[in-house]
Length: 244
Ligand SMILES: [Fe+2]
View 1 (cartoon, rainbow, N blue to C red):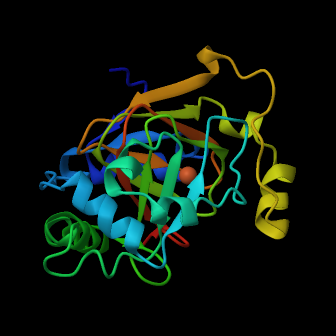
View 2 (tube, protein in one colour; view 1 turned 30 degrees about the horizontal axis):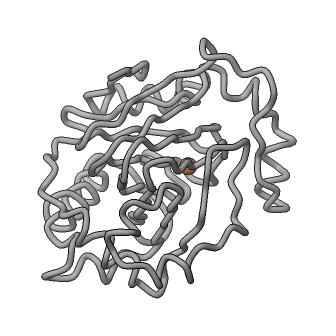
View 3 (cartoon, helix red, strand yellow; view 1 turned 180 degrees about the vertical axis):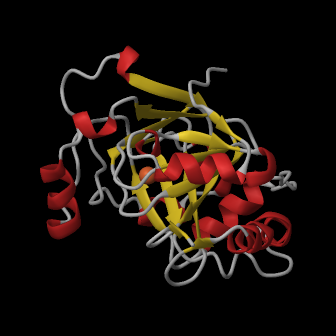
């Protein structure tokens, strides 16, 4: 298990790092008093079943490459398969941006909602974090050979790992690889970032996700994820994140 990410364990360090123009651009791990939560049990097949049947699920086919392919719809095939076959589908890439149904009593993410999502929302508020709109957890599930390819996000994200093998990649010098023109094209014209030629292993910060890990990715900082088994993460996306 490899981890090149610096662990951040106090709110004071997190705030300092966030406000630092250089360090604040680089991915890190959050733990200690910043994220003092254990991982309650989540049944992978129950989650997959509820997620696959959720009408709001975005279901794509994604293999490793240089960018995300939002046109590779896979929903009809996946919804027609027996669940066991879905679980073995190597290029499954499923996202749900509204978890209200899966967080209800009796559903797969209910305990997670009560024991992690709600308490983390409260803790962020208490510690002076502010954001626009609702607290926003998003589910991502991936097949054994799937990938979330090189991309940037419009919000900073905290990625909570539930189960499975996922190798996370970010860059030591994100803004050197991703100039403002690429960010503007994404924000203004929805033009997706493409992994530039020439990124070497030594330019990357790699983190092998273990269940319960929380990885912090700054806004508009390139990253990509390769799966090694059926896996699931909850991404907390913060619109207009700031410290009060
Ligand atoms: Fe992302």
